[in-house]
Amino acid sequence: MDQRYTRTAMTLHWLIAILLLSQFAFGWYLNDIPRGVPARGYFVNLHKSSGMLIAVLIVMRLVWRLSHKPPPLPDTLPRWQQRAAAASHNLLYVLMLLMPLSGYLGSNFSKHGVNFFNLVKLAPWGPDNKLVYTLFNQTHLISSWLLLALVMLHVAAALKHLFVDHDTIFSRMWPRRFSFRFLGH
Image (cartoon, rainbow, N blue to C red):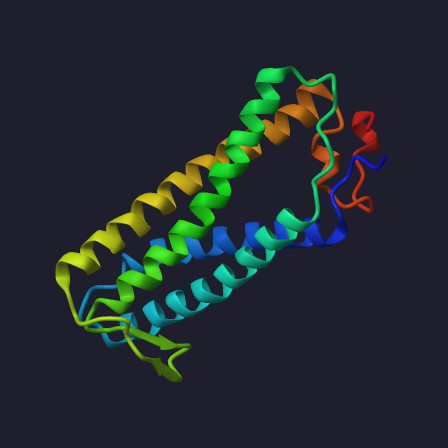
C-alpha cells in the first residue's frame, strides 16, 4: 500500500501553505498602512478577496481529505505521536476554515463591506454593527495567530521526522521528484 498522499492532496497542501503564509504576511503589512490613506482600502480589499479564494481552496482540500482517506501512519510511530498528529491536523482544518470565515463575516458587518478585487461590491449580510464586526475581527486575528503557531509546530514536527528520526513521514507529503537521497531517504 502506498504510504504517500495523492498528487491532488500534495498540490492543495503546498499551494494552500504558500498562499496562507503570503496572506498572513500581507495582513501584517496592512497594519503598517495608516487608516485614512486611500491605498489602505484598496489593499484591504485585495486581502479580503484573496482570502475568499484561499477559503475556496481550503474547502476543496477538506472535501478531498474527507473523500480520500489519507495513508496510514507507520506502525513504528508511537501512539501518542499518532494521536498528536490527528489532533493537530484536525485543529489545522478548524483554524484554516475559521480564519477566512471570521474575516469575511466581520467585513459583512462593517461599513466597508467586501469589494471583490476592487471590482464588484458584494452585498453585506447585515448592517454596520461595530460589536459584531469587532467580535468577528478579533476571532479572525486570534485564529490567524493560532494558525501561524500551529503551522510552525507542524513544520517543526515534519523537519524532526526528516532530520532526526529519518523516517518516511516527511516524504509522504513531499513530491517524489524532490528527493532527500543525500539524507538516506
